[in-house]
Length: 466
Image 1 (cartoon, rainbow, N blue to C red):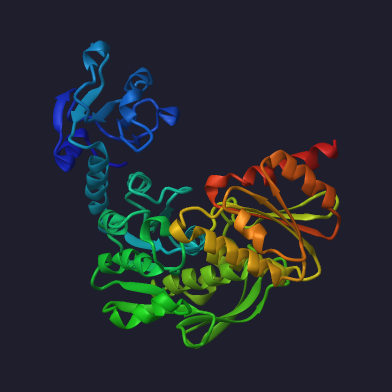
Image 2 (spheres, one colour; image 1 turned 180 degrees about the vertical axis):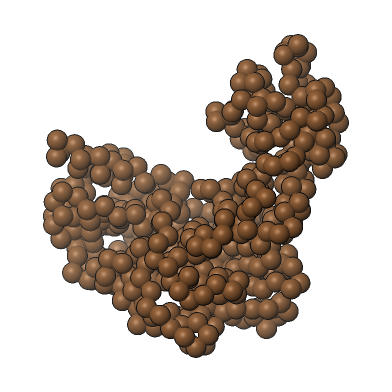
């Protein structure tokens, strides 16, 4: 944070000043004592599975400069006279958002971009950030900092010379997108797609759309929104949008579209069309769905006035996020790909399909885990994945881990399929099948932690070479 003091915080969050220095300069806000730095301001956030108030002693021992807290039963006298500055509020989570809103409003020269959607948010964010950094200092969320805690923490990293900020907005309940847009004050935004994600909370894709479109309402009146023209839910909603719209898709009906997509290359190549002009673009990440992500990022950059050459250069040089189509070639020439950051029915189908198209001559071994947060239709969605896998001729083996993947197993016919209760045994079984023509693909929701299989396979391979 820059030029922000404790008195500014007190006014922003309507807090009660208990003790300390009201003119204390705030340079960093933290919520986790494990990564806490000396001199930081500590927010004692209360979550579903944790309470930051339980770590106040640790925060004081690490010499924080100030603490924001809310519980009445905290005996702070125990730490006297080594107390930092103290501010008491009614709700620390609400106060964190209020502080972020106040700090964001100070950056009047900032262009803020918000990204939401069922799939592709993080990769689109990284692609767009890579383009914007060609010209100016750009900030974006780290990792999965896309919720009502992560977004405020990202806002606090804004500096006076930050020209662009790209905020990924996630949601797991109604009203979250609206709350996040009030924090980031977007000048423009993009909805990557609407699909079968978070149905445990939203029940239907139509409800997902109702939540995601709050982003559009939160964009400034003179701003613009970028919409996936190939998505059935978004395309139906297009006539209702009053703000300026830029569309993207795989067909010429969109403002930004692609032709001549070549997926058989290790780095996908396609012709991108923008405003009547076209250039051949190469991506450093596999998958047809990542062509979609690139088109979305390009559409935002185009709306912000970036040239075609700047867009092309940014896409060619972006660094793919971890656990998203990461690939590694083993010593026996087999290829393993990790896409285990998250999964829902559409992303599962798209990624498996893209790999089958990209490597038509490879023998594909699928390592799949549960797709989570799908609600009452979870069994049906997993069954659909099993039926889909049946249609792919180059799938040699399917290895399943989790509770819901049993529905996938029930639908797979005429292919080698095994269910495992141990990741270690799963890994050992896969290693028996590997040869120079093997392609191993790991995909599941993040909660299944199947990325450890990918990591362990690489580690074992490296140890063999020693």
